[in-house]
Image 1 (cartoon, rainbow, N blue to C red):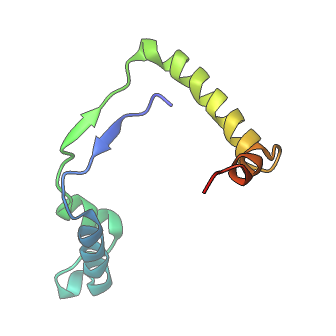
Image 2: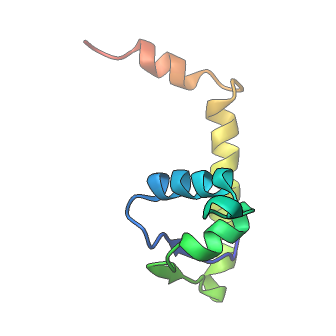
Length: 92
């Protein structure tokens, strides 16, 4: 995709997200925030790390991903029952 990937700077991101939503529910008049964006801007720590794609690797990864999608559809969407056959052959 060529997009950057950021690693969360908080260990308990689910709890932090819940706290942000609570702050938005409280609203500014009760010491919270008026929007999720405002809560994120004030409460979220910066990313711990950011991974940036290497431009020359993008084409091969896109090709591999296209093949993965074909295989997923082939094996995972009922177009081929090979997985069911293999499961039926399982010993034990």
